Amino acid sequence: MKIYISVDMEGVCGTTSWDDVTKGKADYPEFQRQVTQEVIAACEGALSAGATEIVVNDAHDTARNLIAADLPEKTQLIRGWSYHPYMMMQELDTSFDAALCIGYHSFAGSGGSTLAHTMATRIASITFNNQPVSEFLISSYIAALEQVPLVFISGDQEICDHAMEIIPGIETVAVKSGIGRSTINIHPQTACERIRNSVQKALSGTLPPDRFDLPEKYAINVSYKNPADAYKAAFYPGVEQISPTTVKFETSDYFEVLRLFLFIL
Ligand SMILES: [Zn+2]
Image (cartoon, rainbow, N blue to C red):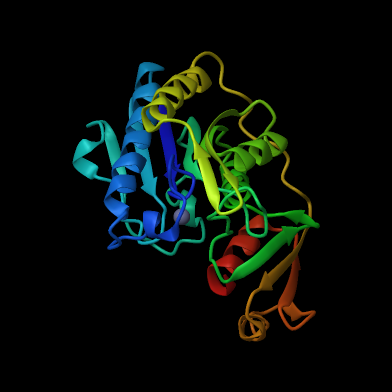
């Protein structure tokens, strides 16, 4: 069984301030250890369910966060950004049996996390067909495109609720919830224990159907905080600026959505 793990950091237990997730800041090493521990827990759960190969994609900021030597030996680690349009799901293909998301967080414009955003902090919001777009949604559609079932997410409570709306039956572990400028967290070791158990459960027995139906059309709106970003984005072929801060784009091909995001987010 070959497993893919996409890893972010703003949804890791305890992370509350940007200092917690920014390399070089004094608070970062504590949460670098925690994100690594949560990935180890997911790997252990996968291995006890029968995984023979695990590819871990470090997909937060510099994409150089995880402490590689601490991961189980059966893992391969993707560090840095290739700038393939699959971004947080780089190298995912049909050879994988299942995908997992660790440390994922609430979407731009939502109140469920002190670190809520979608892809870049200069984005105010993104919608597909008037529905809010999270990084989880983007990743889940990539998994669907490659016919790989996405079976597990850990992160804040709101992104777990959002994931269950997109993929009913997905296993979730909420490690914290965001209240105003605070977070309420379970204990870091409890987070790891729950991730280990839930990943094992998600990968045991029959895996769910390998895909859900992708939308037939994508009417995409991207709103920026700064109007200058919308002005620039409007030069991408097919993009139309509809307000000082918002652009829109329409396509029926999800890969074209990803190509757009690579250049305008
Ligand atoms: Zn991140």
